[in-house]
Amino acid sequence: MVLTALAVSGCCASFTKEVIVTPQAPAAIGPYSQAVKSGNLLFLSGQIAIDPRTNQFVAGSVEDQTRRVLENLKAVLNANGMTLEHVVSTTIFLTDMNDFVKVNAVYGTFFKDKPPARATVGVSGLPKGALVEISAIAAR
Image 1: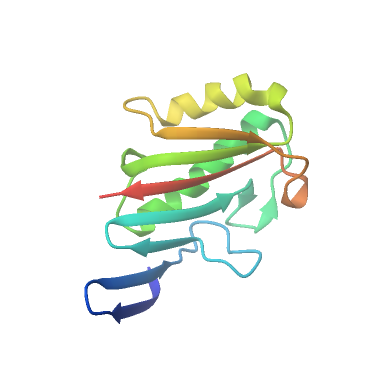
Image 2: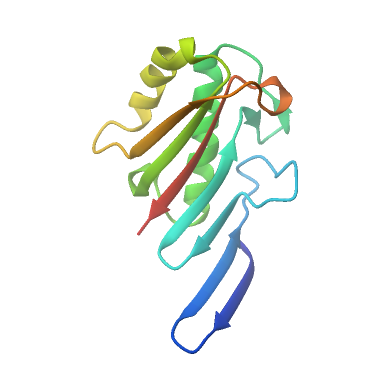
């Protein structure tokens, strides 16, 4: 579902910005959008392991949290008629870099063929005590 749209025309180019919102993914817990579409690109905000049905954080193993995060990203992609195959880049934030191998194992089940470019960053903390957060960029 597209919530709002903004079009700005300049002398040489046009710019569009659409905010993508779906109840199939957790509602934003701050002043940001689940995703923003501009041209053929979709910029997905970082997701943590929040269950969209309950809006509650899903505590558990880093593997469980990674699965929930990737399911949330899939839901936002689907709201824009896209799939994980459209993802060209992801950024993974981990509170413990020792979880890198565990996250990779789950991540690989979602991105089997032609995985996107990726960066993984160790951080000191994430919202709600999450162990992992993932953001993405998708393209048509």
